[in-house]
Amino acid sequence: MSFKGKIVAVTGAAGGIGQSVCRYFAGEGAAIAAIDKNASVKSFASELKHEGMKIAYAVADVGDAEAVKKAVAHLAAELGPVDILINNAGFSDHPTLMQTDPKGWQADMNGNLNGAYNCAYAVLPSMQQRRSGSIIAVGSVNGLSALGDPAYSAAKAGMISLTKSLALEYGRYGIRSNIVLPATVRTPLWASRTAKRLPRFRCGGRGDGRGTPGRLRADGRQYRHGA
Image (cartoon, rainbow, N blue to C red; front, side, top):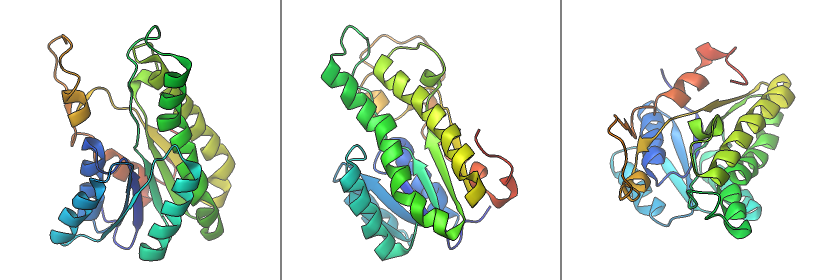
């Protein structure tokens, strides 16, 4: 599977899953447009450049629509217009509804569902003009059931609906929209929360699903859309 010549934007690029996704696509020949609110994305981009991969970065909070607009414009100027958007950025800071006040609810919504919308909104005009593109969201099994982290879960459920709406409305322009729903993944964020007593089970590694967005985007998957 080759993505040579493609520009792949990855949000949450400095995180565990984000880094794995960036490395996967870069290893398949894509140029990476890395976006993260954490300034560590700069050192990650330098690391990949040192390894011979083509990458540009922008520090931006996906929950800030204006910041996303500027970041996408900056990256397009450096690399070219985005062909594939991986809406990977997301977080949860509120494990129970009782611990979630209105401000916390809005923060989790903004960093997940609103962020996915802001990034899609920023890249859609160029994709529509070129009648080509792919938007892949990294959701969660939390979006399918009550598994804790209610604001995060509601946001991920919203991302499923957003994915289907994008597929329905923009499929006519050659733009595909899909979502992947990983279970618990062993990332640095996950590690910081292991003070909780967790049952013994195999937790997914952050590289386990990194090829899934690539398989959804592969040109041989033209009919895989809205899934």
